[in-house]
Image 1 (cartoon, rainbow, N blue to C red):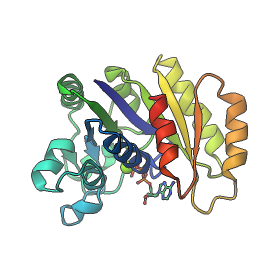
Image 2: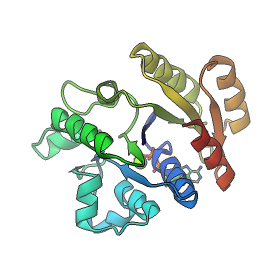
Image 3: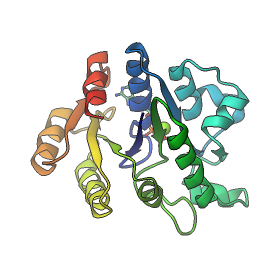
Image 4: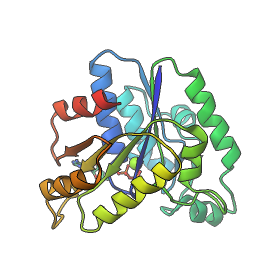
Length: 221
Ligand SMILES: Nc1ncnc2c1ncn2[C@@H]1O[C@H](COP(=O)(O)OP(=O)(O)OP(=O)(O)O)[C@@H](O)[C@H]1O
Ligand SMILES: [Mg+2]
């Protein structure tokens, strides 16, 4: 029984890409795995297949039905904005305490490997008071942090890791996921981050990663 929380330095960095790769790896290895994306924004029920929840269900080999979407992704909002803003657009608020209780129940009930994908980056606001960091601090699960190779990522990555360390959260691995069209190479990003990130394993992920890279990441978790 193990649970891992996948977070990132920002949105669109590759959390779902890494999560689905890991799910496929674990399933191929015969491991029982489940995944949650408790909070999502930019959700269109007509395009559920391509949503994060849809992609995770697909990797899990489960049907993308309204029931399954509701099971793994109960808080869905239409606007492709941060949760605090997307909820306000619908005159709603994300119930933070319920989110924590939902996540904790899932971790307790889990009998295999459970992967929880966060939303946006480490400190994206969830409501008027809480950010993803408060969610992470409440759960205290081991973390997988995904970052990119875009210009600016070095500061975003080191800032995120520093903030997580201050809350005494355990980062099992940092995945540096090659950003499409970046002026900075994956190799240069890995070299620099390797100099500053001394205690966390750092793994590079190219745009066309092979299955072995997901095994490398999985073995660190
Ligand atoms: N290494 C990669 N190779 C090819 N495509 C990738 C890679 N990483 C990410 N992508 C693509 O980039 C896009 C953004 O990635 P992804 O959806 O995983 O980000 P995310 O961090 O989960 O975003 P969100 O904050 O919306 O949850 C997706 O279309 C995904 O398929
Ligand atoms: Mg995602």
